[in-house]
Image (tube, rainbow, N blue to C red; front, side):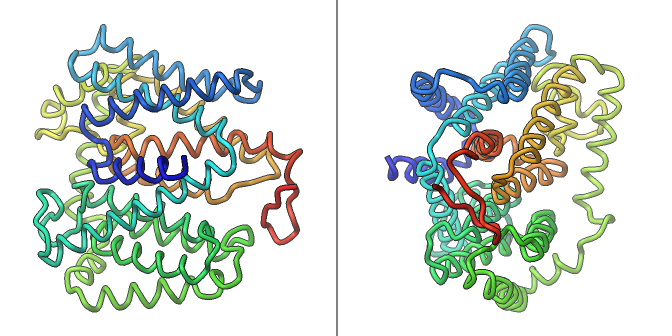
Length: 384
């Protein structure tokens, strides 16, 4: 089973992060079947799960309903099919065992390394893969640099947790993944990664392993300086992080257009996929997504769908606050994806969405493990 989990993440990461219809539909079938198997073993739903489960179910129902009223019927069908993977991913996070959680971590880290090496091979000219490069930017198998960077950052977070229990091996993997992240030239993820690392280094609940805690910042610093100095593009991108950047101005135009659309269709939106039909009317150019997942939901299914999604997020955060057994790494992954979703399209890649809802489930179920777990003073977690 361990190798099935790892292989699944490797396949998903080298298949464009399950972005295309035929990919996420197959993935969702597998998710639903596995969730059904787990449900037969854990049929009782804890009352603490009612709000997030109901909220996510309502979001799914609203997206399905938008097929009937939306202005882009075909787009609504495919988006509704994609959304159908959210609830089973969340349920799997609620019910999997601790050792299965480890297998997921192994899968994300190993697949992240595979993605990095494929990207390096494309950059060096060893292999020629369509979409692996965008100019000098490393897109690798995701074929979108910003999402590649986000995925590698998630893998780095898990390496910092000491998933492999070998500090020096973890630091080596962090070095490889960090090099890959930098070569994506994703300024948005660079900023988020900086915020994540500041929090991790200042927190007493993270980077518990002494060897990782002591060497982690120096590893990041040396790798970053070395890569930036070796690449003039990195230095140029670094010095052009500002609000006047072309990409940011384009996004502001998308957001302004989306807010205008929401103003005219506030309650139920224009239906899933509808933005693609009317974006030129509101923005003046074609863009498939708003590049802000929260605004995207408002455009798709209006305030009704948005309230369902926000209710889900709030319930997950509430579960984290209430439990004494806090999985800070899971929270950091969820928050990182949420921050990225404010400025980009990561959640439209089904692999990223699956990880998001999976870790939301892990956070929500943590409070039920209290009777089997003690929390030492140093912040580490010990299973009794």
